[in-house]
Image (cartoon, rainbow, N blue to C red):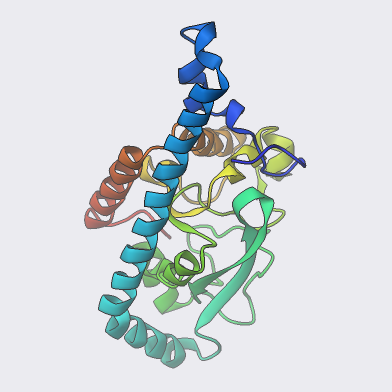
Length: 243
């Protein structure tokens, strides 16, 4: 994690929980050598995480290629228009990235800005789109984002630019909002595993979601990633929570 240079997403290693663990017990432990060792440990884990992302995304795209082609054909037959939906969202360190999804709304009614959130029974959603969203199959093209390095398999879910919660910008509602961008956004995350999904029509709901994201950033470990992946898979087998 780099030193903070702007108000968006860049934080120093000294703000992380890993640094706190090495410095809280004994003031002498805050030597440059120990801090350097701790930073190397985190970098090793991040390197393994990136390797894992590339391997899993590559295998998944190869194995799921027939399904992806079938879904693309069904989208065309169901509502015409483009197969993929593209949207600008927040990425690592506040960088703006273009995220891919299977289009689940009518082409003429979609909201590329992401300001208008989807609600249950949303009239913009197509018949097939409702199924894709409920099963989260609409998210599969984000495996391409993972390969590109814009996203990870696990991390805070990437939000659309100027996304709102309870009628307010997230940045206004949660002052620490951009701390979540110190890690690559993920296809799934701690908030989603804990059931914090769907429209954020209440301020408390939005704050709980961001609290999960910031907890993940501060407590990142490969073991936590594996637990989130396992929890997400278990949730999908129970029927998923998307809409």
